[in-house]
Length: 318
Ligand code: 8YV
Image (cartoon, rainbow, N blue to C red; front, side, top):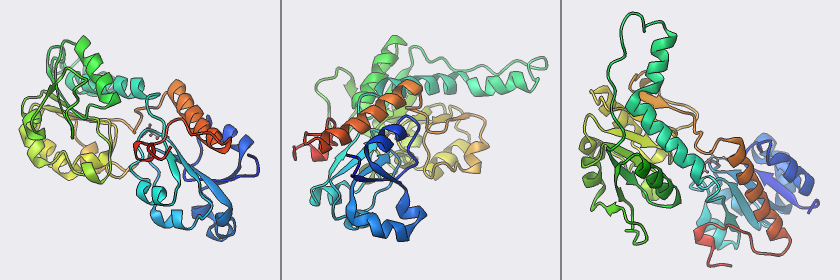
């Protein structure tokens, strides 16, 4: 495969870079860093490596006549023009399942952090406030009501963990999932209205843009806690900031944002909000598993076999 040209849309992480370098002629973000050099190699590019946050527009696919496969190291691929890739016979792969545990673990950590005000408590100790005053009382999580927006593989992993906290669980998704026993809410607003914690774990992209809007936040109420471990695009961020600024005491815990890595100053100023920098899958173990699967998809394809984990839209093509 060493003679195969591969373009990366991201700076390849350390667990993926050596595998790619050993197997391909790797062009790291050449379309952005050196458009002239890119124009020379573009007709030869047969593979793309991307991250879950990468953007691959149809226009770039059009410039790559020899492109065969796009391997995303991430479960989300909302930035990839899958329809355009498919129309050209280009297969898109991603890395599902290997990150379910980590993202579900982080969702629970954020729920606890928001309810028990862990970040504020840490600041309370560090800034020497403890001798002057106790922390205000927090909110109990065990036994509370969890509403899940999305009931895919990661949603199910979150629900499984929440069960151990004695939480009652309901969900809303585009389709009811007969294989799970959790209660299906008739609408997102209805789910929000009956939840203490609303956890967002649904794919990003056009279909879910701004799904968590002012009406959903109003239904969640001033003491409800919003947790987002999906994509920033799913939450109407200005509406969330409005709700929090106008007295939502429950708060929010967010791992993803509308325009990463930039987080609005108004959001950062809110003490009842816990913020993490898109770390859902960011453990050494999981990132290695994701890199290995992203690489295996490429190597299987170029060995003449079907890639292991094509995105759903590309599965019938196999
Ligand atoms: C990573 C993600 O941020 O899997 C996803 O969809 O958002 C994350 O796991 C990223 O894709 C790592 O490359």
